[in-house]
Amino acid sequence: MECGDLSALWSVATCRDRVELSLFKECGAKPQRPKRRLVAALQGVDRLFRGSFNNYGSNSRFTELFRRDERNPILTGADWPYPVNSVFNPGAVRLADGQTLLLARAEDRTGISHLTAARSQDGVTNWQIDPQPTLAPDPANYPEEEWGVEDARIVYLPELEQHAVTYTAYSARGPLVSLALTRDFKTFERRGMIMEPEDKDAAFFPRRIGGKWALIHRPVTPGSSADICLSFSTDLKHWGNRTLLLESRRGNWWDANKIGLCSPPIETREGWLITYHGVRVTVAGVIYRVGLALLDLEDPTRVIRRGDEWVMSPREEYEIIGDVGYVVFPCGQVVDEATGEIRLYYGAADSSIALAYGNINEVLDWLMKK
Image 1: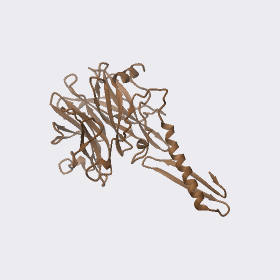
Image 2: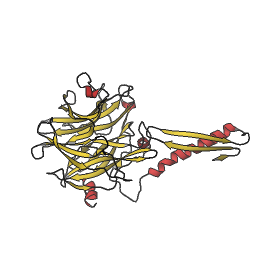
Image 3: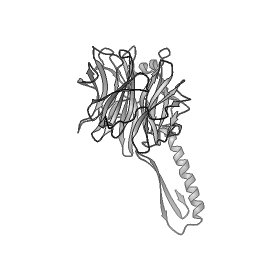
Image 4: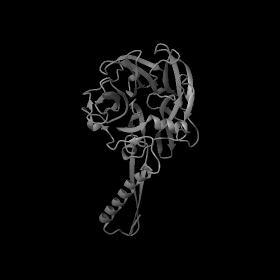
């Protein structure tokens, strides 16, 4: 960009944690009216920056499987009744009274995360948020929670008449999977660690399979890729029979080298429908996207279908700019069994909570044609 005697090169540098605007000036002869020229340059980079989001707009020639709510983001830290840095990655469930409950990850101003419940009659507006953390770290009794609790997934277990909340506990040992049971999201029966570190992104199936509880999770060992596994238990405490379920791909794939479960599995006529995230590593940082897979109803170790393409990718400003940019990260959904509508709740750029709508029939049709 040239401004007479003043040459200004503006670059929009996007990285994992922030979007930086950098100005590099190369001066020749003494510039005239530098203030006016600087204003013009600022206006130019503003147009450039705003225009960059057009690259991620939806294509009207194709139908998106998941359509964003126009009111997004539906929850931010500004909605919280106490000071927080950010809210994101909520677990979700429909309660017996018809309300939607989100168990959101809230990062406080120390950098430590806890879980807070938000309730809404329509699942979109008028959220009633607990006035204090609903499930806070308890390192005195659970030292694995020293650095916080994160990214809950919620599954109702009819056999126990309780909700199972699996979440990531974080400490110097690394991330691991912990479990708490609850009937009312006010009191919790904490079961503690159920998967050793490093492990996360875990959720139950809502019923026993072959007489055993089944848990999807993402263990990582040194030097290995991050793949999705399935383990089984008779008592929700001792787990075994670990099976590789979905392997991360290699090369330039959108889900190369690192994947993990998003929301809990959904039981459908064709099989267990799961959403999972894939992490694309680029020279500018990482991109978290969402894909789909379908597992056999009676033998979920068997993958019936796995989509090659992602079905949701960061494109909106609130998904691109935040504490961790270029991230869409669902941890929960609510399904309308009558209509097949899926309300997918997701964290956007590790900074806010957003909502997208899909339909089970459309998703299954897409997957079965792959």
